[in-house]
Image 1: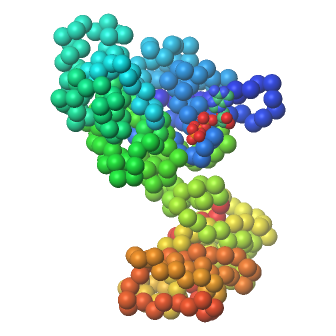
Image 2 (image 1 turned 90 degrees about the horizontal axis):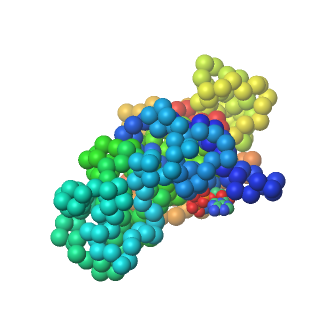
Length: 359
Ligand SMILES: Nc1ncnc2c1ncn2[C@@H]1O[C@H](COP(=O)(O)OP(=O)(O)OP(=O)(O)O)[C@@H](O)[C@H]1O
């Protein structure tokens, strides 16, 4: 499926920014793609346009090379699951799941077979005669999933389907959704604002911000090679170091940061003297005097003062301050063998060039 310069402006009279702004995405057949972003970033609106419940202001949506923009929702062959289950309360589980088949005129015996198959798929065989109110939240959401896939759609859209469930149940269902994706082999487009959920479930993630795609990539791409400050800050935790470019060698930028020379990966070629921001992850930083057994001492080094030290079980989390006042977070795996740093202590921190990105 291809989204080309897709746009939506709900209020065309106002000068407000577009709600969805030139979103272009190539979604591979069979892919698990997640749209991740803060509230109001345009995720639901994009999904609604794919489903056909909203009309784009501009741009195109093509499935298998054919535009579907003019096609009504029921002809697009797309299944959809919402956060609030949206089951019909007066219908049994069987009737709920069979509803899309009835709408499509599937004969009764065939319907019963497909409903049983779908309930099997979501691990709810034997629940057909119950009403939604007789089910837990997790079970209701499974019924909603069964109803969305019973007519064998080519695409399943899910809008925060686990948002209303508690953490434990959410984590179980995340694994089930992955299994379901593997079993069905169809394309999933999944919307969430939970970055951990996105990282664990997706083949690729499209990070949305202000109606635009900030970056698309695998979870590793986004975590290790964020292309901009928004992505670096939204996915996981990041340090941002102000620096001035002094030169470029191949794909490595040499920059000056708080009087130290710091090297960073950079796809572009920033000009000498340009003010830039370097980013690095808290868990990729180490205290320079800790052991580097079997490793090379990383190239990037900076002098800091410890301003806060928090023991958090598996990790120690340190707040550090560089000479220029920049705050830096460092996370160190905790071990009885590692000396804890005290507040006020001066230290050198070190990290590798491969873990430093210019954004
Ligand atoms: N039916 C509507 N009428 C007018 N404006 C709308 C409508 N639906 C959404 N919007 C606006 O479009 C923008 C994008 O909203 P959207 O619901 O797509 O974001 P989202 O990323 O899904 O957010 P959330 O995570 O909170 O659901 C917001 O500014 C919102 O106010």
